[in-house]
Length: 431
Image (tube, rainbow, N blue to C red; front, side, top):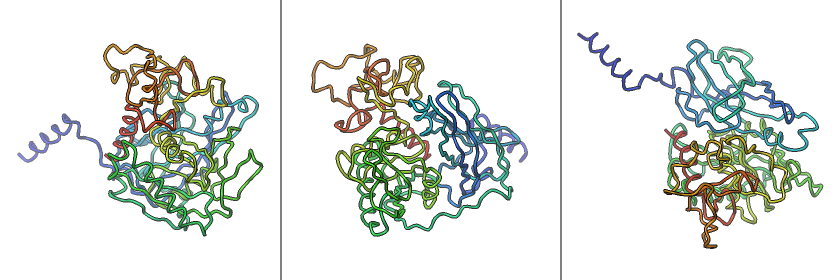
């Protein structure tokens, strides 16, 4: 009789869909870190693994179901080596991909640092690093196995740097953990960094949907010390000896503030649980950058600091695209092919618009949507339509609102489409 009841219970589980294997069957609560290089030129991409490490803290989602949001120019897929079951997957972007769209990439090849993180496996897993071909097609760049008993897996110890917990409401496995790293702050400027980090947290929590989900966001400030104060400005022939080596003038674009030292960034981020890395730069000069599931980097203070901080977080956290555009071209104006539907949730080329925000449009809304005749509505973030001009290009790419935090610093916040995309990422990381 007990056997019959057990069989009936197992059948009920199968029918109801609750047959997924618990997280702790496949993973520990440590992190598996894979450092690799993305290499190539405008037409070619290769991925070469450098090092596999085992780090003490895993603060990400604790699932073994391979959930994937279909965001990013790249993704990695972790599967059980015996059953082939997908255990973990996530998308990401890369500075290398942006560089591939620049004129320099037509002349020479380069290599860029990249890191992926997932929970450390208890048994052998296969890892694939893939590059996007279309919305639903991928090509394999690298494929390898990780055996947890491998003696050459590096046992990383986190750097000994001070940090403060600015806000913590939830266990890291049920929260979005945001690690704010200091850049260009000397050891004597540590308290200034903590003040700036609190201000950054305030900027984010003033905007929806971060305000709505404030109790599910944990913030940590990691006081990485630099030898010199300030940030490098190559366009002014000024270089600083800073901990993360960030600088303006990335790809010869004066305001583009980034760093290629990703391995160093991830070393310092490992001090705390980190779903998201935010690099806060000790400067008042206007600029920043943000790349999906990679990092965001902005000036701590100065003109439009609050707006830029939220804008770049939209890139790095939710994979939102830039909605502004240039009439006369820019170094990044060939980022998107208008014959292909981009993966970013807030722009479209109308090639597969049914995969975007079509269900949010008002009834009988024209596509494309003309800007409203009322000039005051040209700055509206709440009108949803299909407005031409986005992704650095004035023609052929469309955005969901007349204005949005992803378009201008004047906008009061995100448009409904961008809010929805941010909320989806929060839910993925906290459920």
